[in-house]
Length: 284
Image (tube, rainbow, N blue to C red; front, side, top):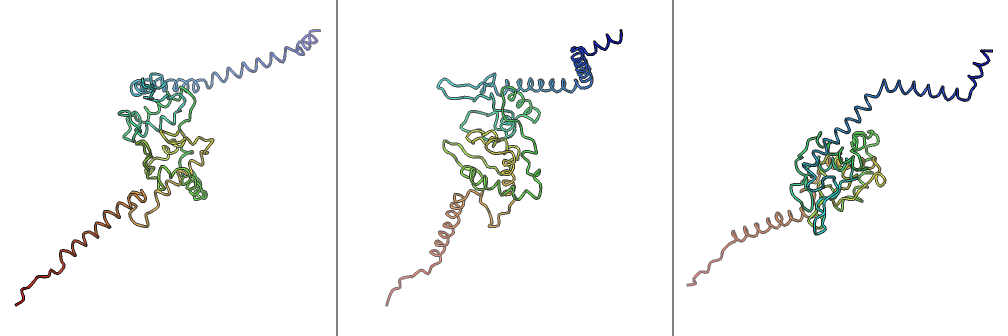
């Protein structure tokens, strides 16, 4: 009689639910005992990074971008400092790591200069701005470093990168990446000697007047191909002699006028100074 009662209780519809709940409780308890410290430490570390970044932001950035990075508009309607909500950590890392931000004074373009914040402070600022809204993250070395391209594929990658660069970038940055002038007092900076990480971030975020090449427009591996081309172009010797800054007809024309015509003028003066002088004699 007793065994029949126990058997009927085991077959109860609630038995499966009870067993499932017990299994979940045991699994959750084991997980909580074994791995909560890592997750809690990570969350606490992120919060601390954001908090430290906000403190740096209020001191060095809020005067132009607002206390909450909402941007500041002047009375005449011009933008004193743009909003940073949604620009992402990559934009902050590019601007701060290259010394473009913070600016010493407002201007048409932020020039590259010595960085004011170290790597840890830059990471803190990037974490704070990233917490304000979704945006591009700081790229990893696998995304921007051409050394991660397999050796047998590197030549093809350079060719692909060169095709894209000549089609989309030379109008501003010059055929050799030396930079060039733009309207309104702006300019496209030189790409010679720029770190691959910063080139990638510039394509990803579109600083100042540069267009944005998001991952939907230009895939990460295609951005890396462009960087590979720039590095290969920079390492190629100048077989024709001095590149004169690689500015094309501007520097070459100036050299032709100053050196070429200067030599001709000097030679003409020398001929005139050493020509035979005729003297009028008195005939008797």
